[in-house]
Every structure is written in structure tokens, then in C-alpha cells.
Length: 362
Image (cartoon, rainbow, N blue to C red; front, side, top):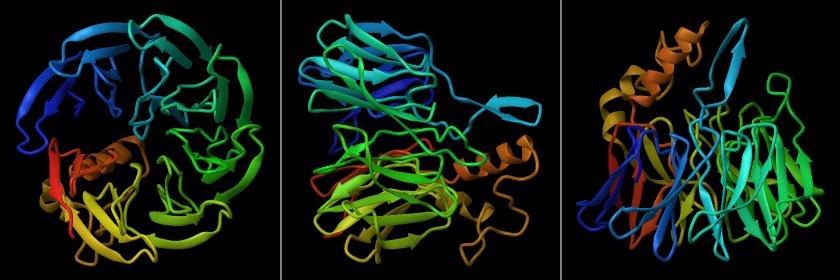
């Protein structure tokens, strides 16, 4: 578990007691990758770390060209994109570890010693975790492209350009793709969910949301794709082969984290500080958990009908208004992380500076 303050913790799953702690200079903004002996993770200080998973000691490091949030421009002002929360996670395949960087590169390193094997540069920040399948590395970039690179040398097998949208022409790809039996599926800031042929990059289908980015890595179970949206505040079940909506669940805030499953439900976190458990077949709400931050501060954003209270503007008329609104949202203990389920307990972190272990319903 990593924090924006630079602390990385290993906790006992039963008691929550700290096993070890490692301190870095930058924020931890991706899920760690745990191998047989090492833990791999990129830090906001521009260092990719390989730590001994038993005690947190550094085994080797690799330095990128620097990590940062994507820049956005409003009128004459340039500012950090406050919704660019994540850094690339890592993927391990046959003793090679792959990850992306804000310097625009996709890197392949020797997993044992950190030696650079190859690198490929895109024209945008790479904050999406790569996916490796059948000798190809799939990685999205904030330049609006999904790249399929050969694992042998990093050369492109194909590159797919997102459609783009009027106010988001690049169609930035913010999170990792997922793989089904015959498709690679990912979301974009152009409001589209795309399904491509993994071998050729040719389109199989796409679904355009009415008005929200699709940021989260889609989750797949039993022939269905489950994913939440940004401004349309919806959570979908989509047919993996058809791309048709099977059901949708209205919410009152964004979903950026990916979903996880037990035998009957799909679970995901929301910016409003709620963790939801929906019936996978029809989207019925069957279980919820509210973070401590949400319990304390939910009323600052929502009224008793779970609608935005009078005086709250989601984005406002200026950057200052937007930052003020986002601060109130984050104070609700937003769940931006992807939960993990183990032994009928769901684990996740929140912006209320708390890591939770919550028993799931039977």
C-alpha cells in the first residue's frame, strides 16, 4: 500500500499491523507488482523501484526522465490536470518488467537487475499500466493512442488512434486495457469504450458514453465487461462480444477505479466515498460500505436526496472554483484505487488517508 506522502507499507492482512515501511521522495500512485521475491513500483520521484518483498530493502532502481501530471490549458492558463491521478503500474513477463513513464516512454527492464532491454517513446505521458499477451506489449498513452509493441525489441506491431472529442481531441488513454477471449478493451477520455483485435488493432466495436470519460481499466467476467464512467456517473455491464449495454447503474459521482468480483457481485469504489456491491446479472444494488471521510463530509457535497446540495458546483467558473470543489470531493474519502478481494475480505485505500479491510457479505 502506497501513499501520496511517499510511504510504502506492507501490512498483515489479518491484523493490519505494519510489517515494513519504505520511504520515497514522491507519491505512490499505482498498484505494486509483486513477483516471487521482489516488489516493483514506479514512484513520483522518477525512480522505478525493485524492493525485497519480505523486508522492503532496495534491490535495484531505474531512473526515468521524470514523473508528472499531464498539463491542461484553460484560456491563457496552464495547470496540472488534477484528474491525472495515476502513474503506470508494472507488468512482469518471462523475467522482463514493463512499465510506462511521464517522460513518454514504455520501458522493458531485466526483472532481476534492472538493466534496460529496450525503450519506446510515445508523444504523451504513459500512465497506463502495460498489458502483455502473445509476445505483444499493449500500452495506452495520453497522446490518444494504444500501442502494441513486440516484446523482443519494442518495435510497433500496430498503433491505434482514438477518435477524439470536441473538447478532448487527443482522446487520452489513462488506464490499462484488459483482454477477453478475442479482444483487447480499453477506455478513453473521448467518452469511448473500444474493443480491438489484439493481433491487428482493427476495431471490433466501440461504445460512446453520453458524456463521461471512461478512465478505469474494464473488468471482465463471464462474457461481460464492467466499467464506470466519469461525468455521466454511470456503471455499465457491456457484452464483451457485442458491445451492447446489458444494464447500467446510475450513481452520483465518478468511478475511476476498476471493479473486482466474488461469486455473485461486482464491487467498485466511487469518488463519493462509497464502495458498491452490485448483482452481476442485473445491476441491483446489494451492498454498500461508506468510508469514514464520506460519513463525516458527505453533507458538504450532497443533500438528503443524494443530489448536489445548493451552492455546490462540480466544476464552477474558474480553476479556483474547480480546485475548491475537488477538495470537498476528496475530503469524502474518495475511492480511486482498485480493491483486492482475499478470503471474503475486500481491501482498498481511500483519500481519507485510511486503508480498509472490510468483510464481504455471504
